[in-house]
Length: 398
Image (cartoon, rainbow, N blue to C red; front, side, top):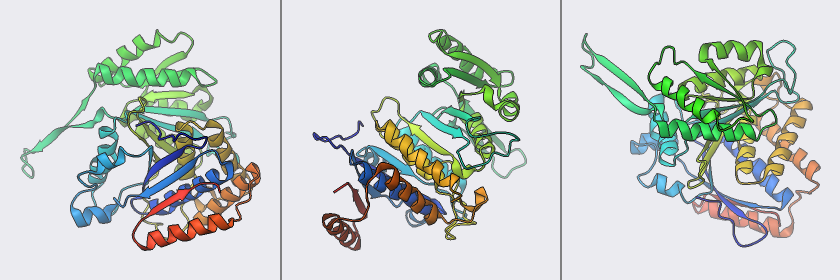
């Protein structure tokens, strides 16, 4: 689905918000609040947000993570904001397969993209690593490999019980991901890509992975390309972070590497993820990498930066690069000012960080967010709608 740009100078984007469980409602709300501020301040586009309550409570009540028409519902939107969907009383594999992967696979979001960098005002655990020293883009296959769901268990509970987990790789799937990765690398400053593999052990699927990668690489002579095993990659990320830029890996490998990458930047609370359909025939999905963190849920101390950064990546995907960069710059200025949550060594709350980013946007973009009479009227109408059960927020500059 292409963005629903109306025939006017100011497009309106419809966004589905799935805040899910644990700390997710708080940080996704923070991302939405910042997007409201950005839209008001710039006046270049508008957002309409619909909240879809598909968290663990929905599963407990209905026995499924999304409604029967859930995917068709999502197809009506221009993008999706998704918070972590894990809860102590629901098995992780149910949350992953019945919500997250159900959306990714049904909407052909075959490319997962996770930007990683040391933000200004934050500190990496790596000695002498400064902002700018790490600037990676980790791309991983999002619909094949270990996420195809092939395999099973038999003779459960017996001494001879058997379980199989089959990773599936197709030439079509690998080739489309590699082309996306090389196109992305070509448009970055370094024009560099590293292909992660483990074909020495996975000598069927990942030999196909290697062969297709080598074939595609020949079509991009302007992109510097190298390949390394996943185990060597871990040491390279720690010892030689400046040798990397764009990284492409299978789903399982990149899931592990991207968590390492997040830790190397200072906190997993800083890293966003984008689940993309590069064909743009379906909406893409954005959110923080971190989980629902039920141990701090309700305490108001969760780091909203990953969700805010994910919101910026959504804005970028919708075609507003400068707006996305302005938002990220404001996030970094807030970090530089010392407004940080406990995971970054600060004492600020989720709301305090969110409000600080909104104030910084107001200052940077030169727009006062004191509500005008017309804006106050619209807010009153929206509050009344919510009382009637309509959980819809319309964002625009008036």
